[in-house]
Length: 165
Image (cartoon, rainbow, N blue to C red; front, side, top):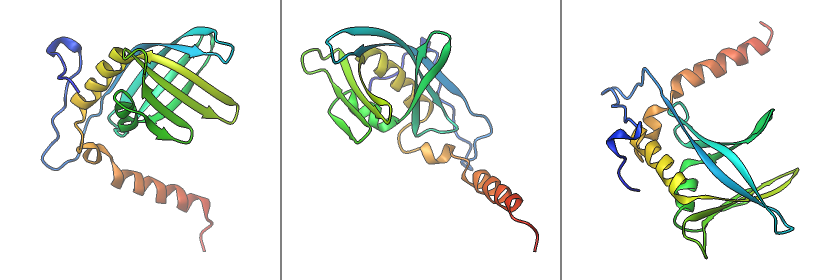
């Protein structure tokens, strides 16, 4: 990954010595994708790549559909990064760089409703991913997870479901 330019709007937060993070941040980039139809037609699709330090292991890819709710796909950040350089993925999500055009990244997304094959601009993806790494470097993701608070909430919710004995 290339270094993030100072004026990119991407800022890396320093972690406190305890590893507890008081404030989280999110970051998004607009991205242009092309839906590749089985007929050979290509349809432009506007999307946003979204990253939140509350869930530092994933990226949300939101495909806009006019007035209709967007279609969101939650992808592993490492999978998306890997797919900009080589063929990655298994099952519902597969990503690889363009064979004929290295400026493209191909995404194949499988869902019960069908399959979508899209291409996206490699430069747009890597710029966004560089920002995510500037916010939360590789290997530091778990320091941003609020595991204790999540466990406490889980057990508090669980107790509400059961009558007192």
